[in-house]
Image (cartoon, rainbow, N blue to C red):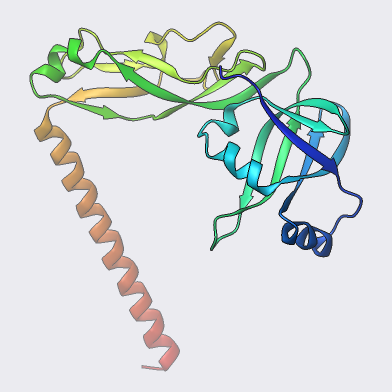
Amino acid sequence: MSDALTLPAETRERAGKGASRALRREGRVPAVIYGGGEEPTPIHVEAKELRRQLGTGHFMNSIVMVEVGGKPIRTLPKDVAFHPVTDLPLHVDFFRLAKDAKIEVQIPVVFVNEEASPGLKKGGVLNVVRHELDLVCESDKIPDEIQVDVTGLEVGDSIHISTVALPAGSVSAITDRDFTIATIVAPSALKSQDDGAAEEETATTEAAEDTADEEEGEDSGE
C-alpha cells in the first residue's frame, strides 16, 4: 500500500454549526476521530492540506496519521462531507485503528496483460462489472490496487473473485457468492446490452413523465 499520509490537526474547543462555520472561514475543516474503544476526539485540519491529500486519489484507502498535539493517531478516513455547490470538504470522519485491526475498504481493480488475451486480440471487449472490490484487510496491509490478469482469456470467458489472487492480509468482504468482476464479450453483444439499457431507460422516463402529467392534471382539477 502507499506510505501512510500525515495530517496535522488541532483539537476543537467548541462544537456546533456556528463554531464549524467560523473554522471554515479561517481555512480549517472540522473533523472527528472515533472508534478504537475511546471517546470521539473533535479536531480541525487545514483545508488546503486536506484538499491536497484528497487529490492524491487514494486518500480514502490510506492510513492517515493524524497528529494532534504532537501525538500521531493512526486512522482511516471513513467519510468526507462536501459542499453541494463548491465541492469543498466540509467535514471529515476518521476511524481510529488498533494495531491489529481489520477493516473493510474498497480497492480499485486494474486489468493487466490485455495484449495476451486472444479474445481481446480478436476484437472482443472487456466488459467490467466491478471497478472496485470490497475487501476486508489488515489495517497495515491495505493494497493500492488489485491486479487482474486477463492472459489467455477468450470471448465468452468470465473473471470471478475466486480466480483472483488477493494479497496477503486481504479477503473478499462478499462471501456468499462467487461474483463476476469482468467478462470478455463480442462487440455485438455489448451493443445489444447498451441498446436494451437505453430502451429500458426511455420506457422508464416516459412512464415517469406520464405519471407526472397525470398528477398535474389531478392537481389542476382536469
